[in-house]
Image (cartoon, rainbow, N blue to C red; front, side, top):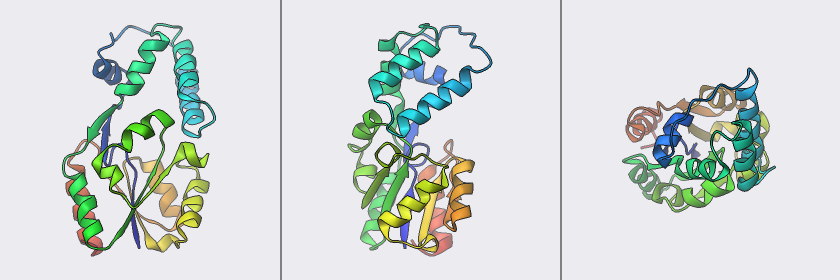
Length: 204
């Protein structure tokens, strides 16, 4: 049995909108009227980054381009850096309690090289027994292949994995694989939600 966590929205608070990212980075929120395909291009660019197909500098440059340079490359980099808002209260204690109980832990997260370096400095992430990131695996959730790859790396059957994520699409893919998946409300007390689910399952 292993307890596997998504990171953003479960263990670590992140910005959820571009405007929130601007405010976190103390960059002005400016008006921008994108064309009909702008959002799809942003999503595609983010997926390329999180699969490790482009580096952070390329992502910042291309994202600035997609915004018609309303935000400069330097500003985009600042916003990206400020996207991580720190660990959710109580999550380090959850990870520590699982470790003390002898329960294996891991993460499976869509992320980038720059964010990954920062995340590994957080106590709740560093305390996990095994850490798996999309940009290192070349796959992103909810692609079913990333769940299969995790199973192979950990030598686990799907029924042996308890998984926490904040996005329904990621939960759905995990459930389709046979994982025991629980959706977390990123706006609430994530540590309490995790503890309640683990208690219901009979782990903690």
